[in-house]
Image (cartoon, rainbow, N blue to C red):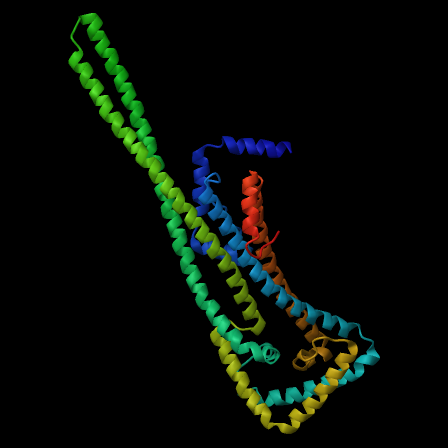
Length: 408
């Protein structure tokens, strides 16, 4: 407790120049560094500098915070659905692993025949179609949603370029605004220096005129009037320039708040977009939408070739039914996916890879879910700080939170 109090006092006494230097160092980082950092770790919401006592500014700020909460929660809902599917697959693997040996003999027999027949077909097609085993498994597991995911992946990639451009533009705009603030502060300091110099000159002139009046009995009316007029003119100029600087500073601060608000929104979109791209690419084991489209095309051609091998297909189907029955007997929920992963049922190493792949996918979803949850909590914490200041603020916060979905 004592350490926090000491640190608080030290921060309160920190010179403005030091604070400005820290702010400049943070804000003037290269956009590429910011993008790289956000791709590695959850985004942090940058707090805006808002005059809470200004009703319009306060309400607009609360609306923006609530909008961020709604957007993050919508992302969480989509992530939870996919997370539930991955978790269900992992539970099925656990049921299979824990089943008694005698109950798994028929399952392994059907799986072995499926693996052998599939390997025979694969040997015929290996020289014709370009796709890895991991990509083939992904195509078979998610064949019905590959076209939609291809379209989504292409849109996310295009959107990624736009987001990067927006972040670069916003970063440049913030740097320009910071430069404007430094220029205004520098001009204000110059005016203070000029004012001090003018005061020193006036004191010197006053002392000199007083000496002429009392020591030499010289008429100082004209010099005195000229000095006063000069001082009045220079003072008027200084006051006018100071007023302009204050107005420019207010305008610049508003522009900075706007840039921060837009930057927060773009950072949130970038965080979710990067994680979604990463997840889809890992899901299909591809580098981009073009490769996914190509692999899917190869898969469709291979599928037509497989259709010609009727006898083999019939045998595989029969063993597939046996496999499904055995899986159902074991209580496995998602049974169809094991047809494409039958090799994992007979090869422990393959099962380890499948479990690792599902764990990696679940971890990626958890990181994205935690990031969005943290954003909601930070925004709500900021709203709670405003709520606690005055009762009327609390009523505004309650009204805004009740307008739509959010966290309470």
